[in-house]
Image (cartoon, rainbow, N blue to C red; front, side, top):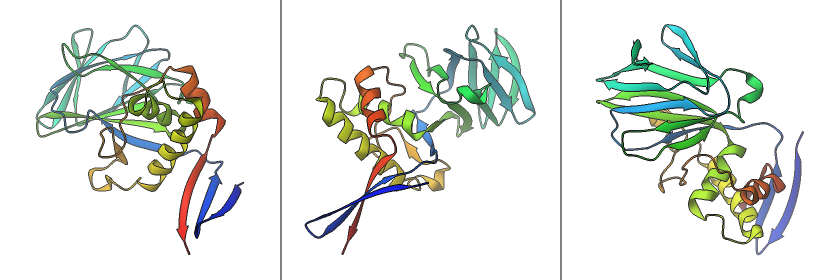
Length: 219
């Protein structure tokens, strides 16, 4: 079902659209950054690890996986043992009911601070570099963008407004990187996204205008 509110303002029709269906985004993280190795570990849920030959293991919160680029392939190591050499690796929450609440830690290389992300991760390799795509429900993506772009110090109502702007932009630009096989990148070219936000006021701001976007229609 849909609920709609319509306002007329200076000749422009503003349509605030509350949608009920989930929207999953694929966001390329560490976009345009060359990386030869990365470490992955679940934070709060078990993850299924799959490659082109099917599921190869279950990663729990004590698991640390290492991914290394080998040309256009990925070497996957678990406990310093090679588990697979594959074209892709898909790491997804094992249980469907934790698809959005599950988070993982990704450390792109030695000496770089780890980042936490919710949802699912797909890893591929191209031209000697690893490529990471975070698949996430849009409502879990929005707090991360607010955290990255405006921080936690702004007024609560500003964060609510920012949530609507981020949601509207994401829904309106899901084809921006279609030729590369994902929706958005994590840089200013799209919207800055550094992973999960744990800030209570940001999470509350997003929840209070859940599923609200703005559409502009000229008359």
